Length: 301
Image (tube, rainbow, N blue to C red; front, top):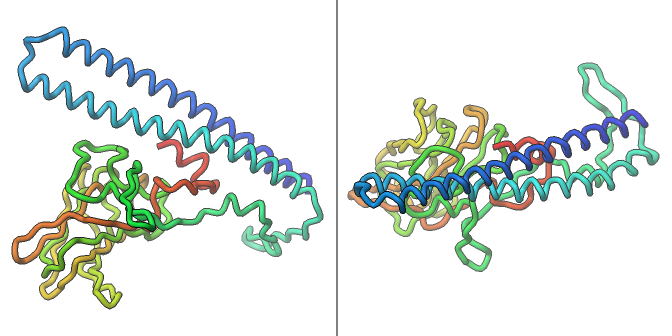
């Protein structure tokens, strides 16, 4: 019993130390980005002879740097919250492990039999929490990496882990996840265009959602390899009339966060629509990130 208690303490201490080091790195990144932004601004102001193209290039660098700095600050906030969660978990878990707990029998092959599920262990269960672009009362949300980032036309021009695209909760593949998109008008669907901005290649299936709730698979297979950002086109068979599309991702195919910026619905009448609302199997925007799988290691984005 003492062995399990000591192991638990060691794991928590290691995670705590890892997150502390990562927090310091994030703080250094923020300082570096702030210095870079200041330098770029000064260069722009001190050189009035720059051509319009050069000015636009510098402004684009500033915008991208600000977006990345927002992402780093978000990671820093997550790291601080995680440190607090780990400390609270340590206070709750250690006393529970010293209580009377049924013996744990190691089965052949390394499995553990008769391992009771302690209430304190629920904080470390890895579960996916469905995420929506809108609140229950219909208000559009404005969160980094939430499904609301998929609405409308693309606004993530560069490749990378950028908060203006949707990202699932965990970086490591956890099997199938999905992104459900709704459009204003039902059309005879011709194509679905998906803009992938980070770690593309995980899309495994696309389904059209029928009014009666049925899913009609319109494409299934393996994406061709491509570098982000990429606009991937999926052709749809004739006779599929819908205003709702579900994009499935096999998270085991491509490591890291598989991020999507926009999904366009193309009708056979030539119409083009961007999503007006969306739901996802999970998103990095949701606050419930308290499992061991997502706490210490997924912060290292």
